[in-house]
Image 1: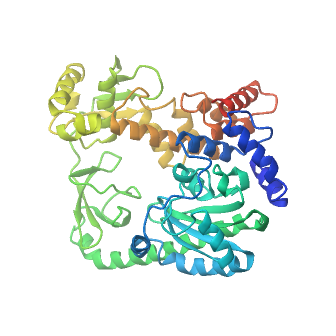
Image 2: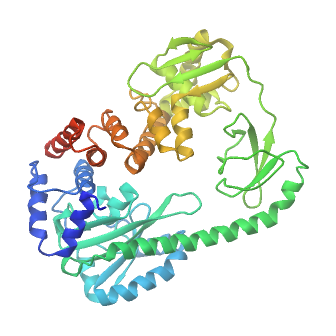
Image 3: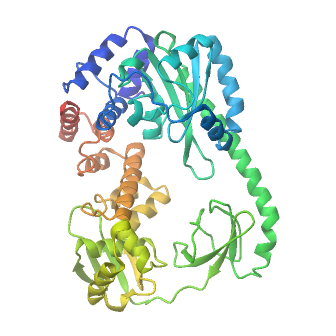
Length: 495
């Protein structure tokens, strides 16, 4: 069953030229701060909002140039996509020449690394700045298929006046992100663009299929490298003589293990001891390629000490120590959150940086630790700072559920943003990362109740994609459905 947005795409591509007039009316209304006389796709409305927040000029003429031709050549040569994209580009170019399309490949920052196509359409692309070295992110040139695909990490089609910048209203573009099969990170985007009159319903399918082909080719290469690394370094596992350890890829993936219970799929590469998530710790040693993980002796904890941390949502954060609840200041909540996330501990300098960035002083951090130890006693150990207890936390419950792919458990445990008043750099980064992961889990897997609760949070109240998902998931006569619809309309019409 098609979603409302998908229905709009079908209607647009059934008459790509005829629908441009109504799209331009909606575009002009949105730029004037008025309610569009028609339904704008949620992905487009959200992108317009991001683009206008970035102060993109709707009357810009061309995409900005970020790199010279020589710089682009260097970027291509060193880019992970350079080998895998070659075959796919040639396949697409054979189609593009006949269909008057241009094929674009960017890196993860939206810089065009390759741009090819028939001479006529290539010339038209150059007129609007779609050339190698240009940057086409949303904050550079507004809503466009590549920029929006990077912003949402999803295949994206942008047609005619769905582009924020008017000079692109004669274009239809389909794009799909390309992911590193090892880390899952976005490496770039592949895009097919054409004039509105040449738009074809199969373009999106073609781009998505090509992206899957490219990722498959890279996955084969990773598998071959893994096998070679295992063969070259198996002797290091044997030298452990049953003490327990593993071979890790250069990015920390576990390739082989010996004499140990199951390990996480990936181990963070760091110096010193690294927590393995189940009370065990490891020590990482670099090899010629990749790493060797040795299991460390388990640190001595206070087995009778149970510490539970509550740091999600707008309520005052608190810690429960052996059944006794203690309300926390925001700064003490930040410290305990950082130590719960890093059970192997933090030095004074590391904790200071996580709390204050480059502006903090170790003396200030030590003073806060002194006050916090007055409440927690020896549970808060020093050198390094760490928690000597069996630690649970609402934050950790959500992260564990997300890592296990259990969206419903993650959504049930998520009571709101992590320490929403905190300005500590690492807490802010953790807060944004957690909310983004929970939001994606809700949109992809959540039911109406879960989506509505997330839309009621401070962060979710103006999230158009989330509001749209909640509206579609709630039953037709549920009063909450009207609430989210009204709020979405208000967000769209606000100046």
